[in-house]
Image 1 (cartoon, one colour):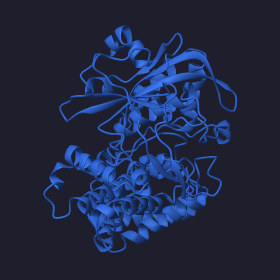
Image 2: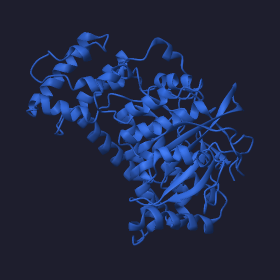
Image 3: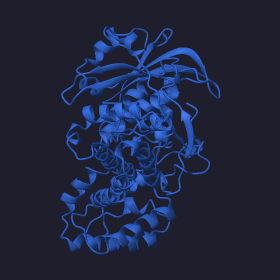
Image 4: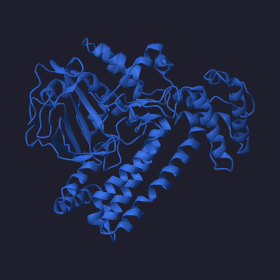
Length: 463
């Protein structure tokens, strides 16, 4: 059962997420604040926390579980049941040495990023609300508590399967797999080997998801197997970050000193995590060969998805010989100049196929102007080769290259105000991030290069 949150107050609510479950946002705040805070359990709800295990930073960590997450239940929607879960609502059987609470800082970050990723079209859990309290929570310093209500069709993760495998409990492993297939992958029931089919589909979804992360410069920061969704959704927002000055080796998680979860490593770690899931499913699949065949789809799906997304980001409608060299040279240029990732792709749409007149805003991101000019001329030549029309291409590119992402400094500015009970910046930032591809000239400053002080921001696993 949730632990009541003293004197709760509303911090933020997502009207979009509320509509998904047929709720009125205003009514939720006016009449449902106690439920959102975990102070009142809704009628017919039977709260529970789930056990799971996992590999953390590549090392088997044993039993973990919902240490600060409590499931209320699910509600029907047009697309199927959606589970509601309190995060930060107090102790559970799996809290270990923790306090079961979340802090306002990390709760705002999870809330904003969940909704921002949804607006970017990337599969993700959703966030309905953040409720705060003046109750103190000890982390590196004393912070204030908060509860997020998050939403997903399921919070079952790779580690849910690993738990029963490493306990040699094939009966419960099978019960879990049958439940996931029946509820979320019913089309797989009639496959010759439904468990192999399940692994293959989850592997496909994971490969596509991580390709989408790479395409917008998103770094999860802690891709442990207990943070991987069985539905291929982005799950558990902790020390995440969006790429700014491009560095393929960038590590967004200050705790990750070895760089296991750097931007460049994410595709490989996604594959590694699928292998961990596969190991857990071998007893049900019954064949190492079939298990390997299911895993073998990862590389092809990831590569094809990245290729498709990059062609769209560059406004290229066709695949041609030489495209790989053009892309490799582009990333080399970004790396050498540490050009801003989001601004580069957004401004790229202004390049004209027949002249250099539109180059200047993009060119300004590079120290090596001559290197940029050389690449831009090759890009222009490639556009002319498929008779690209500037206006149509620009519109298409701006529909896939966001202008606004949740930069760390933007989140921090909202958090700083919220910690003084001014939640206006959280609300304003949410409204901007819900329309990431729109120009929004009145919010132009949210798309600017980060200020110098932003370089000192660090996020870690300590939330």
